[in-house]
Amino acid sequence: MATTIGTREFDRLREFLERETSISLGDDKAYLVETRLAEIMAAHALPDFGALLTALQADRPRGLRDLVIDAMTTNETLWFRDGAPFDLFRDHFLPAWAGEIAAGTRQKIRIWSAACSTGQEPYSLAMLYAEAGRRFPALRPELLEIVATDLSDTALAAARSASYGGLALQRGLPEGCLERHFAPAAEGRYVVRREVRDRVSFRKFNLRDSFLTLGAFDMVLARYVLIYFQDAFKREVLRKAHGVLEKGGTLVLGSSESLPAGVPGFTMVRRGRVTFYQKCDAAPRASAPGGGGVGVSAVGGSPGGAADADMAALLRKLQDLNSRKTS
Ligand SMILES: C[S@@+](CC[C@H](N)C(=O)[O-])C[C@H]1O[C@@H](n2cnc3c(N)ncnc32)[C@H](O)[C@@H]1O
Image 1 (cartoon, rainbow, N blue to C red):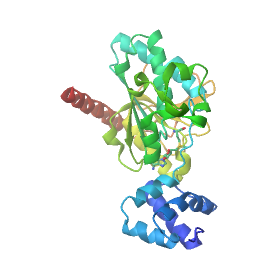
Image 2 (image 1 turned 180 degrees about the vertical axis):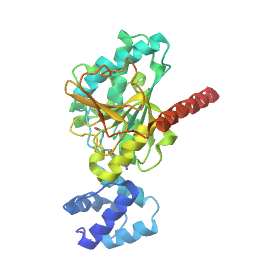
Image 3 (image 1 turned 135 degrees about the vertical axis):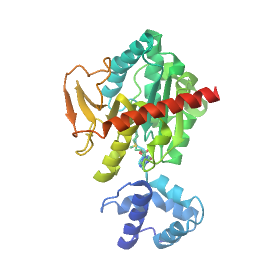
């Protein structure tokens, strides 16, 4: 079996990947394709990359495309990644939302973890919410909905199982967290407790698709995923994220990432070591953290704004109608 890839095959393979997922492989990533696809090729008796590409084109066997896409995603993640953004979530966003709920100006909180990988990011948020409920009784469990999406079936299966072992447990979990939020399971593994799991729903979702099917959100996390895309698609994702954010809603990127030029409608807010972006086509909510002026600056010019704000409001109304129908 020939598991080295020629230049032509490599180009065709990366065209396929970019077309399907927008993941862009650099010229130096042939080794990545070789190592990640060798097992799939062996399992399907595909003798070389030419045969793999023919099979992909014919979509035979069915499911091969998804396997290849899955294998080419990088699912690196950890609990409370970068620390500081999660501290800010606990110390500023949650108290602000609790105040709004208590004052009757907010009914619920919807957060989207876009590219959630194996679940550490959304579960970290849900753990902080569960803990904050003891300080702020207004933060009742059923008021939080975290929608967590990813393209990778393998990552989503791990996330849904909520079962973690070995290295995954050692990466980023603060002291006491294991005891508070996990139950011991077989073979030294631990499962996230139900009160945390119930706050998160997982769904397969390609960032190339329309975001409008997901509803409106108070916060969107698009962390460490844009790095895999070309600039034009990064901007497209962020413009679509703007469209599903509520007025004054918050966009969070990875700590080493920043909003590319050409994405209008966000105000950059710096709080300590954390930078986030607030939808700015209307005045930010009075109680939203950072809205008061420290380290705040508009980025990207004039938004396509009012229409997007209306779209988020419309999405929220549809959600409310749907949840009334199903309850
Ligand atoms: C490095 S992980 C980031 C995980 C998490 N957000 C974090 O910061 O730890 C990147 C994730 O993006 C997902 N991904 C890549 N391209 C995608 C696309 N087009 N649509 C949806 N998810 C995608 C991958 O499957 C992978 O799980």
